[in-house]
Image 1 (tube, rainbow, N blue to C red):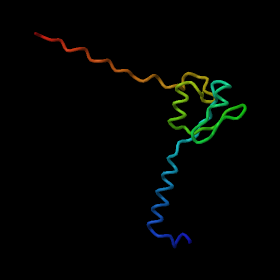
Image 2: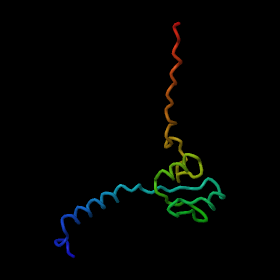
Image 3: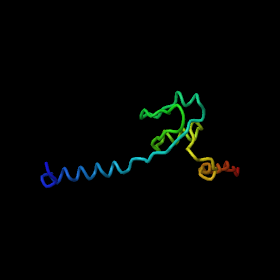
Image 4: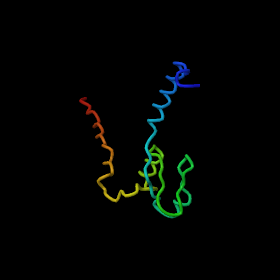
Length: 100
């Protein structure tokens, strides 16, 4: 089928799929924290680590959790300025005083 023969419904479907693909997270280069982790740690999409160097993983929740717990580090992120500040903690309300 040529471009002219595609139905309007199919054109909208293709546009929607293209938009969904554009929202996929970009990859980041990560290094394992130790050689032991290099051997056993894999991203759920199946991407492990090479015998040496870094690997490119998607910048998704799994990767962000591994960075947060220290299992992997971003390649070239020796500077502390790139790290996010810790989450803001809200003070707890004090107990209401009883005026009895």
